[in-house]
Amino acid sequence: MEVFLQEHCGKCGFFSSKSLIISGDVDYERVRLWKKCLLLCTSEYTKVDLTEARGKVTSFPQQRPLHAPQARASNSVCVAFPLLWLNPSVKIAIDIRRMTEFGVGTYIRNVVRTLGRLDRENIYLLIGPTSKVEEIGSLPANFHAVPLQQPERSLKGYWEFRTVLQQLDCDLLHVPNVFSVPRALACPYVLTVLDMLEHMSRGGERNGMWRSIHFQLTRRVLRGAARIFAVSNFTKTEMEKLFGIPPDRIEVVYNAIDERFLHGHASATDRELIAKRYQVTYPFLLYAGRVSAHKNVVRMIEAFSALKGELEKEGAFPDLKLIIIGDDLSGNPDLRRTVVRSGVQNDVRFLGFVPIEVLRIFYDSAKIFVFPSLYEGFGLPPLEAMAHGTPVVTSNVTSLPEVVGNAAVLVNPENVFEIMRALHRVLLDQGLRERMKERSYLQAGKFSWEKSGRRILEVYRQVGGESGERPGPRVSSRNQEKLSSGVA
Image (cartoon, rainbow, N blue to C red):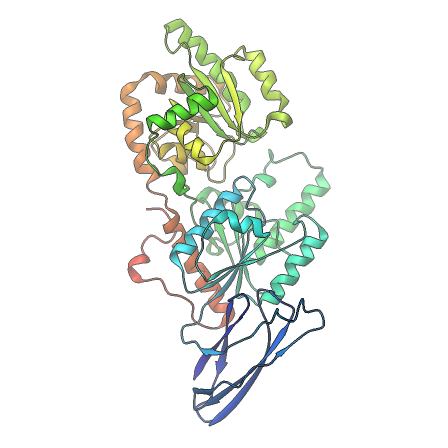
């Protein structure tokens, strides 16, 4: 028969499981294990003797901790207690080192929080600085932090991550970006790919040799993955075309809206907050996101300038402003020059970063959310605006039509006057605004972190269970529905 030994670290509370095969023809078998606490809470080893008689645990000899020379202190003892464990868990490491970055950070936080709500069986090891783990908030007891000390983008950081992963003895590693996978990992890995911007023509100014090396490294990482999560069908297709990844290796698992955007409409107190803190007391169009070149913010400003000219002729919305929320502008002087050149320096405001709790109020208060991006792997901001019933004007390229469906007005992002005409129509056509509002609620409701989390969990079970040659957690049949993408 097959039983499972579970070890418990008396210092940090961490559990680990190990499969043991007990032969029915043998009356007595002693298994000796040498194990290190998998959370590396100490440098001490523990010797565990397990006595088996006819497949039943009959005695647990007293364990004596064996102190390694580099142990921190005599009271930092990692004591193990073996237990019979009949429903083993898959041990999953998640790389959270980039959790403070825009885009990938939002993804990591929401995936980990969702898994914390859905799964109390698997063991999750969150690898990264402790401060980043704390940003996620409260998690159940099967989630554990594995601190790293070295910067990610350094040779020491590369080796530290690889070494720690080998010591953890995981069944599976989940890396939420393509560019942080060391060579020769001790377990299979799954990747999340948010976009392929780095390999598109607009994806940066690099010389030909570096682009070729970068391409080859990316292909190696993608082809080595046990499974790849693509956040849209568009991104999936891009990987198939660029890198020749077989379609059956790629799972489309959509992003979804952060739950903090789902707290209802802004109240009078909320609106008073942005009036006092940001002096916003006028109607406005809103853009939220990065201000890098592919976001097409320059054309958006030019379209707003043209819109102001049209509205002035009609005597409508004389105090309309454009509010841009996102990055620091110090690295984008072209935007300031565009504002001055377009003659709207008194009507365009750059607010920089604002907290999500405040961004929610801006989404809810905007007349239109404008997002004329040239390239997106998914495109969360339009969906976040739709959750508040705010009409959206966005691009008809890349993943955006897939995300917004029929709930937004789509435009050619390279045509300034087409963007302007769409803004003019949505701003003044009240019937259209009402229809867009209703469609927006329906479209935003199709995407859910719970649905996406269940699909991710199912892939963990498949890949991690195969790697550990043991069954993993099961998803009930009623929850199997619509797991393929995380969208209703």
